[in-house]
Image (cartoon, rainbow, N blue to C red; front, side, top):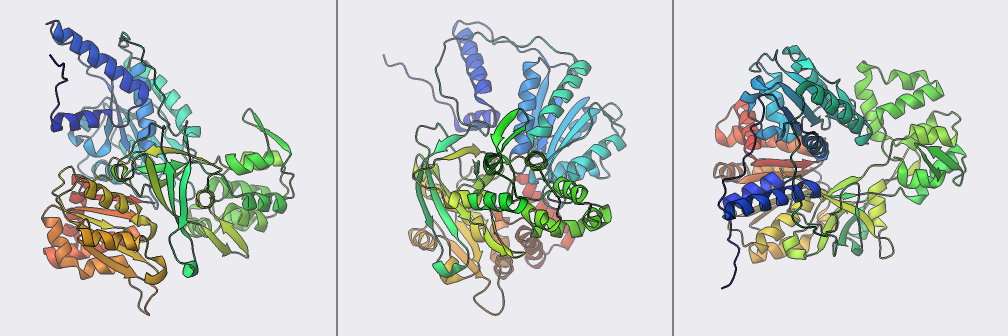
Length: 593
């Protein structure tokens, strides 16, 4: 008689997927062993494995994450807390029942700040609740907040700081000081997590850690991670704009064969870049330093050229770096920019300059050791994946706008985009998958989707359309795409036209801003198609936006409010609440940067 494994229904499988999302390999093997032990007991006719009730006091770890960093830090803290025997739960901010806040005794919040003091999309509702009038008094709560941000923005970690101050204002007590982590997240997050976990253990005590008997040793290859990336061979790397476009956009295809990596449409690919050699040469020449000089720092001894090539951030300014330069040069004008009332001027400086520009302008003598210590560690970059694995198999595709421009009398490059633009057969790329659980296609494939992705923001929507074609999804697909010129910068034009013909794309609205005297952007197309756009949304469509956070995403959001006012009979305030409701329902998702 054939021994068949029973199937599991779709709803239970989806629940298991939610439980497993974000867990590491060690945690998944723990679950596998626990499940096997439970099944063995049931087969012997024994009662279900009993699970001790959590004590009244437990550690709740909340996270709000836009790019996955806060989720990663919170997940690691949760795993360590459980391993230490603490009763702990991990909750994404938009899944947290707000009524639970008044019942919490020990709470950790890990939350990022986006752009100009914006919360991550999955935490907007929680932040509004905590900062608003309905937040309860919290005299029995002990809390700790870790803010994640980018100090190249003036409002660094503003959301985390606001929550930290507000919780204290509601009567709660800090059991760990507020932490501020820059883009080199682990430099702050790791020691902060150590200290916070120790404080939590002292406050809550620990239960006996669960012991799991290993049923069988299963050899396995560790799945690549941010800390242990996979070296992916380059299969294809081609420009997808005309030669006269004025800027380069690359389509890059990488092999995932034998990596064990998998991804879903909406996920991002993390890439560890190498700074362009011409940029490193600029630094060495400008500061008159020897690239072969050995430099000892943080227990490592490397040639200066290697520090600047693979270990240090050369293309992104930050507030701490501006402060170091102001101090070293003694320039009062530069120091003045660090005052709170100069935040707008500082923001403009950091947006328009790379670090090398300030080093040239504010002269001072630097040793190789001082330079390495002053610069931030080089961090990975995230790119929206431009392919469906169901369509391309063991490959992953990217759409990369190459940063290469003249400013302040010198040529400038982007670190990761230049690295990817030059990638070829001889040099595999260190990569990993960064899941984006909030930027997913609807589980109900009969739902319509509306995709707004100008420029390289169209990347994930190439993946969406491929996926919907491969799964024969029943819902309609509507794409809004924009760029500067139709003839030279219509990214994936042939693919979109083929998709319209085969029915995997139902509508395509275009906006090219430099082809006519009057500039036209995607937000204008949204207003023009407002009646039908609003009708789709009222019928249950999901709305997606990808691309520039500082301008495009804000302009699109404003256009959506106008559409709701013009065609839904809302007041502006009601329209904002309507959009907020779509966010909370997961029907308005943004992948913005």
